[in-house]
Each structure stands twice: as C-alpha cells, then as structure tokens.
Length: 420
Image 1 (cartoon, rainbow, N blue to C red):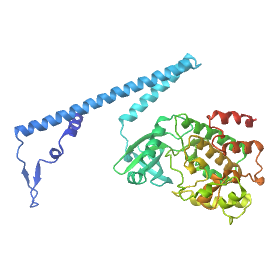
Image 2 (cartoon, one colour):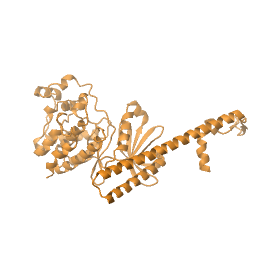
Image 3 (cartoon, rainbow, N blue to C red):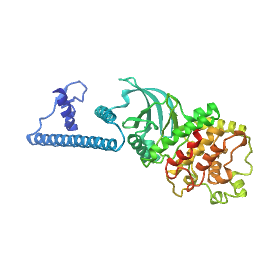
C-alpha cells in the first residue's frame, strides 16, 4: 500500500507537493493554515491526476507489449538460424536455453535503474576531449567495470552528440567477443555514463612502447584478431575511422578487443594547400611535401624519436594522424576501406617500431600519407619477410586496390599461407 501511495504521489501537482502550511514570516516557527480548495478546484486537480495516471499506465503497458514482441522476434530469428545451420538438436536446445537466460538477465537489468551512486570510482585510466574513463566497482556485487563519463555541455559545444549516440548504439547492437562490451548506460543533469567491460591488459600502444617491436608471429596474432574485430563492426555497416594502437585493448588472457567507437572526425587538414597533394609520384613533389630540411634518421634514431613524442601524445586530447587513410584526409568521400589502411599502418608499426609516415609534426605526416607512394619504405634494418611487406603493401595502397575492399575474407584468404 505504501509503495502504491508513493507511486501515485508522482502525479501530484508541484504546488500541492509542497507543504500546505507556510512558516510565519516573523520567524517564530508558527505556521498559517492555507485556505481550503473550492469544489471546482478540487475537481480539476482530480481530473489532472486521473489523466496523468491513465497516460502513465497506457505508456507502461505499451512498452511492455513492445518489449515482449521484440523478445519473441529475437527468439524466432535465432530458431530460424539454428534450423538452417548444421547443429544437433541437443546443441540447439542448449543455445535456446542460453538465449532465454540472457533475455531474463536483460529484463532484470532494465527494471533496475542504475546511477552513478551505484559505483565506487577507482583509478583514472584515460582522459579525452570531453570525458574520462575510470575503473569503478559496483557496490552491490563488487564487479569491476570501466566507466566512461562524458560531459554533456562539452559534447554539445563540440558537436559530438551524434558520434556519442553512434558509439552507444554500436556497443548495444554488436554482440562480439572482438569488441569491448557495454553493460549499461545512464545519465544525470551534467554527465552521460557508459559502463563497459574492464580490460586489465592495457592497450597495444603501451605494449609497443614497452617492447619496441614485435616478432612476426606476435604481429600475425594481433593483426588476425584486429581483422576479426573490424569485420564484426563492418557487417553491421559501421566504419570505425579511428583505429590505432590506443584503441586496441587486451584482456586478462592477452586477447585483443576493439574499443572507442566515437567515430571521431579526422584531423582538420583545411590548411593543406593543393600543391601539397599534387605531384605525389615524383621525387620533386616528395621533397617539397616532406620539407627539404627534414632530418634523415636511421631506424633506431627514428624509433627513439617516435617513442619520445608518443609518450607526450599518449594522454593528450590531440591524438595522432599517423593511421588515417589518404581518402579521409582528402575529404573526397570514403567507405569502410579506410579501416583496412589503419590496420596496415598498425602492422607496419608492430614490425618496424614506428608508423610508416611518421614525421616531426602532424601536418607533415598528413602530407606524407597523401603522397604515400613516395614515402612508403621498409627499412632494411627491420628485416621484414617478403610476405609481411606484401601484406602491408596491399593494405597501404590506393582505395580501389586495397585488400579488404570486398570484405574481410580477402585478407583471411591472402594471409592463410602465412600461418605455415
């Protein structure tokens, strides 16, 4: 009865929720009685309450029926997929039971309204342009998560609302072991919160800074898992657009997960002039775009220079354009192929120690990427195998010739021979 009364109080007019007595202005603490409502006023208030209660109940049951219908449709789709697949009856029953268990857990989570007070904030693990990521612990269960906290006013000011919506929708829609999981999201007056899976293995950037370079066997493992991660979002018609070592996270077992689906805009290259994009195939054009005073370094010197600057960029809000595809920089339209270019740049860094078009400043890097034919070189000291160079070359190339343009299977087939 008490819960029903508290529920019904939500429909009380705001002025009636206040006390019906006011304190005497003299401060004596005495209260003056309010004049009683007239019959007409009381009748109008009652009608408002009834209308509000009716609307609330109708909306509640409409939502319940919609959720029930969605649940039936999801089960029907799963049953059809299992019927078409070569799966034993026992496995089908087990999968359907697992599906029902997940649905029940989802409904339970929906009934429980989460808030920031349900979590204990722990260590800061990342800071961005309009938010931060912290390790947090749920107070009731003790489970550890990563909390992404985004400031609404900054999101609006920077025009990032649609990007954040896309990130949230992708995490909710894509169920893959190759990407970081989203458990729930909620908001308050000032912040939007995303409660995500915590991956204690760090990120690929930290691993590369610690190890300098990876062996080809190690690189093959991480590249293969990155291919599966990119494929898992491409089949849902999403382009990541910001694939870089910072966004490749490692779980407790060393497996890779793709993260940060904000679909951030690429570096603004409006200051690049047309002459910077012309003559990319000629030696004269290359020296012009790179700058004649650029120092020539050995692989070890370039590696040391990159590591020094990378540590500075690690927690900045500026980031690095080293993994952006040339068609993105040229702003002439691009598709999912841009993510495969980023994969090629990351693979190059894994084996060489620094990105393929690294320069002292971001604008020079952009010029090198646009004129990639003149600047893609493999240092002899790195001693890359011909198979590794071939795969990188097929990823860092013109968009019409790029491996993966017709799907991830192209990359899987072409690299099958490298497993031997």
